[in-house]
Length: 417
Image: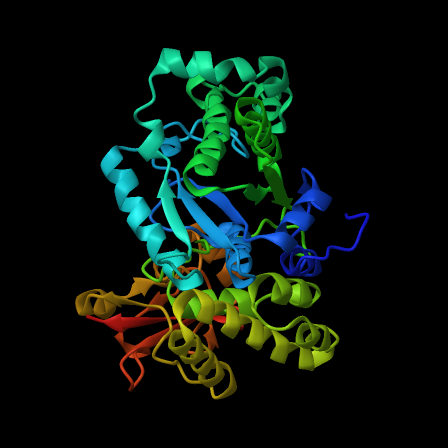
């Protein structure tokens, strides 16, 4: 990974927590980070009104940058979202309206308010629509397009993958990497930004920006990338059977977010504590040595710390307490996800497979059926007999709910309306 021991606090922490994959000039950047306050950025396209756990590593990089006294820039892709990044995609992204993009940016801003401190001299949120929307096409091509080799662009993994699979790659998308490189130069001009960070799939785009700055204005710019983060089982971060693990509470309740981290595999606990919490490294080294039932304490701490960062300490502790009551005492807990159903429907009886799907405990009715047949679905703690089972008013507990369970750890409530 590195041929030398980093001397700057930021890079030492960066390496120790497992974030580093590639750097355009690690020694030169290390020297710069020791001598001055560095401004660095990561770009996020506004394709939804929330980011999910798959973006959390990038969010944490900006947080680490600020924690070590440097200045992070969150670059919202108000301009580039109108095109779509082909990286990691098999097909063209759906084009969004300007109103949709603005609404998504507002939703994403709420996430960063939890992780970063904004204000005078602090973190900055910029929008590349401020400079991309007003570009004149012919002058832009003359001034900047001539610095990009199509031959090289065709060699990028994101482009090769689409071509090899014979998936269409529009000329619109092909421009994305040029505009991302220009973003870096524009941020360097406006904010003195010298660092772009991103996932390993962004390496080619980042290098383009570093080289554009050197060719146009002889700037010394740097790029850092992180490895692809997967679970010990090889699954991509941010996805579950029930869908994406969103970071905004209106997309995913804090309890479900807490439970996602509580379900971490034993082999991932130490790595995820390093990457996704602010716990000191010596404490993490102690926790990752725990074995057997004791590792559950580390998982609970991981879930609580990760949830506190995304949703606040109060929500995290409430989720932990709900889990304790649910699992240790057999109660339901007020913070479990819940849905409301019409009383008349309960009188007639509602198929259990429908409720498992509606509560999010199963991604589809087919999955709900498989869950029941496998013995993993329960109503008020009792296994469902078969996939034709109905939930009726007789199942409503004295506390006024029906508790559905998928496995031992995932629960939801059904309340009569």
